[in-house]
Image (cartoon, rainbow, N blue to C red; front, side, top):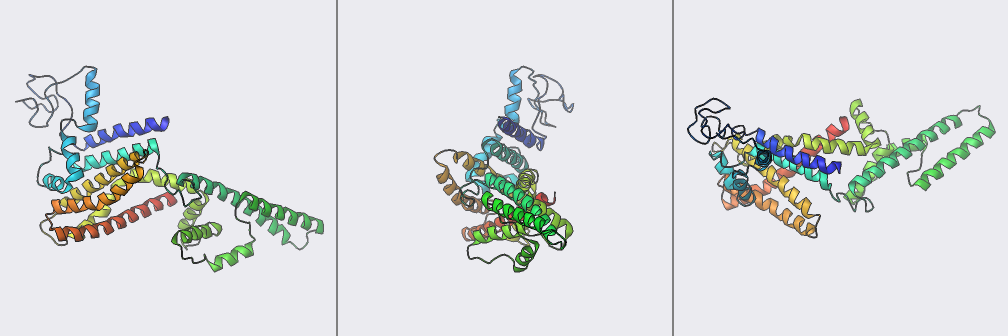
Length: 383
C-alpha cells in the first residue's frame, strides 16, 4: 500500500516539476476587473497579464484546489492534447514547429521529459518491473534471483571463512592427532553442508589459487558465458590493480541486491544524463550542417526520449493484461518507425536519408543506453 501511495505521489510531483520549467504559464491572479496583475503589477488589458501570463481572475473556493491540481499535472488548457497526438504520430512536425517558435501551443521538451521520468518511476513503484530476467534464473524473476544470489553468497562466504580457519589449524605441525582428526571431520561436515544447501563447495587456498590462474572457461553460449564468468569472479578475489575498484566490485558481488537498489535509484536521479549522452550522436547524423544547431538536436533528443518513456509506461501497464505480448511486439516495431517519422519531419530529410539515419540512430541509441547503464553500474558499485 505504501508503494502505491509513493507512486501516486511521484505522479503528482511529475506534473508539478514539469510546470516548474514553464514559469510563464502558471498561477492565478485576483479577480475579473482587477486593474493590475497581482504577480508583477503590470496594468491589465484582458483576462491575462500580457507581461507574465498570469490570469486576472482568482478562485479561492474548495473546488479550485482540484482544478489547480489537475491543471498542474495535465495543463488542460490544451497543451497536453496539442502535444501528445503529434508526439505519437507526427513527432517530426512537433519538433520542427517547437524549434521554429510555436512554444506556447505545446508542452516544452524538458517539462514533458520530467513528467515522463516521474511517471515511469511511479508506474514501476506501483506495478513493479515485471518478469525481467525470468527464464535465465531457474524461472525466478530478476529481484528474486538477486535475493537468492545474495543469500547464497553470504552462506558461501561464511563456510569459506570457517574452512580457511580449519586449514590454518591443520597447517600447524605441532597439532595433536586427535585434534587433527576432529578438524578434518569438521571440515568434511562443512563441505557436505555446502553441497546440501546448494552452494559451491568450499575450497582450500591452493585450490583457489589454481582456479584463479586457470581463469573462467570459454563457452559458445553467450548467456552461459556471462553466468560462468560472474560466478568465477564471485569465487575469486577481484584484482584489477586499482584498490578502490577492487573494493567496490567485492562489495557488489557480496551484496548484489544492494547494487540493484542503487542502480534503480540512480536511474531515476540521473535520467537527464541520457540527453547529453545522445547529443553528440545527433550531431554525427548531420555533421558540419549550418541549418541545424545544438538546440535543435536538444529538442529532438528530449522529445524522442520522452516518447520512448511514455511508450514504456503504456507497454508495462498492458503487460498486466492479456495483450502484453502483443503490445511488446508492436512497441518494438513502433520505435524505429517513430524515429524515422521524427527525423523526416524535423530535419526535412528525404525518405532515403531518413531511412539511413534511422538505422544509424538505432545503433547510436543502443550505444547511449549502454553508456548510461555503465554509468549507473559504476555509481552503484562505487557508491
